[in-house]
Length: 318
Image 1 (cartoon, one colour):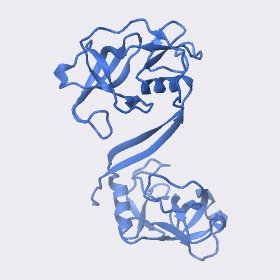
Image 2 (cartoon, rainbow, N blue to C red):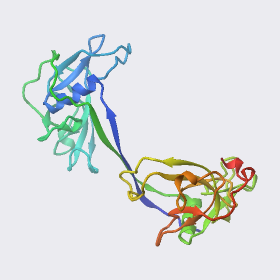
Image 3 (cartoon, rainbow, N blue to C red):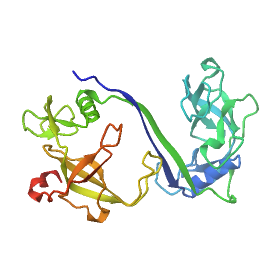
Image 4 (tube, rainbow, N blue to C red):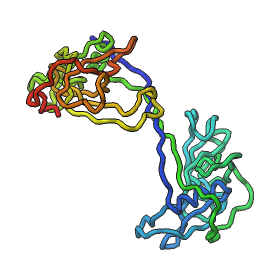
């Protein structure tokens, strides 16, 4: 039996978004140590503010200033902070209703332990030393036993200088990936420069990469079939945007990424095409894999020099 593989996997990319007038004012206010909410049609104050009333869907623009102090409405203890979380020591995630607001803001609460946290406790904002116009301008909340802030928020109609109009948020997912029996066998074969799929016992189609079950019939698959190594380009796209935050920073644009039906397979996989000008890649082009030294999968595919495949031989895989 093939050893089941397991490995850590990280998916990470920067997410850039523009801000509307309400979110722009909110984040710019944080930079200036000011917390802004927005008043709804029924008079409630929402913090964080939103652009549209959640009840009436009307556009909201009435900004108000609330206090930097508030009350914990609920919380959960985080005993092991992860990468890029607000604090490097154990802390509580807390929903805090700031004085003057009708909704709660989620953020970190710095406390010595879970016994020091309770619903109803009073807290205040600890501002970050360096503020840029982001939610991280609030470093965290901390316990507070001083006077409560005003319950009636003050109108805010002034304009900030140099407002924040956009933000870039790093999105990251860390997890351990276990591919399972079928894909473990597929990955093991790639180490030997072989490509294997599995055949469905009912429809007899060979799926690469194998999934452990036929996606058409829903029947478990176990029969291994070696396919390729050559194949046919079924369809493709020309990439004109250079990759960022990846291991492939040396790939110059434009380049071609294609679906490739390996000989003997009934499902196309994808790969990069080189060895031919990007504007000469075409459907039906016959290609073969190129392996980099020490690589566990083909680095790219290149033309074999064979005549193009007839469309009827791969039309079901387009």
